[in-house]
Length: 269
Image (cartoon, rainbow, N blue to C red; front, side, top):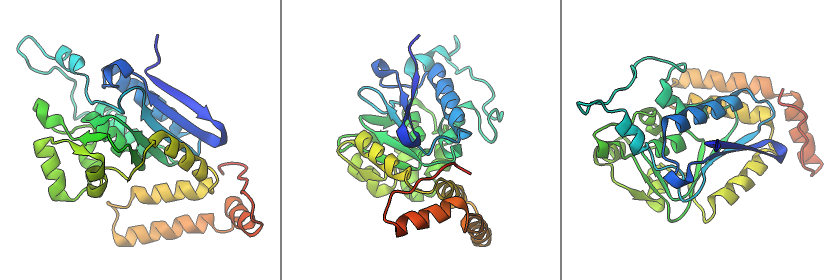
């Protein structure tokens, strides 16, 4: 059976997650959704991983929901037959939301390398990453309205804080496709690069030379960025810094810089 998500472990602690339905432009079938969740959750508690890259195999990052799967979920009356979406099956999320939110729960930086298209569920998976590197000819769209739906793979949560509210409304209401340059300008993507995977690998390698405990602390703090009060965020910032100061990784970071060498972080503490 062909792997729907390939998990490749590289040296230094880089994990590369590859959506692998290239013949379908990595469209999200129920089986692919479950496999993305399984692989993503396997990385949440993997102390050896220091950076994660998520990408699509073939011509696209992810073309969104698989239309054949969508049609199979219809009854004879044409209604969609799905489980209770209000049921919280994965913490705060349902199954479909978890496929994007799982990247936020991975405690190390996650980089999405986007080429081809990231439509519908595909853009929401990308938004779950911390950083989105996009190819010059790639395109993105919150496309659910085309199928009479709304973004329901955590898109509402993930766009908040990235995209201005009126722009988010326009994207959701119209489903229009944006190019890479506009995607960066409005907050859907981080940076346009000629080769997203190559740049992602270089960036991941650089991140692996940073203190893993500091990176994990920074990601925890960023998780509170849009939801915590100033008071709570200031306190969380102070608490995280207190744990870092004088600890093994912080001392090694300072020592390596003073000695002008690459730091060696022995464990993830």
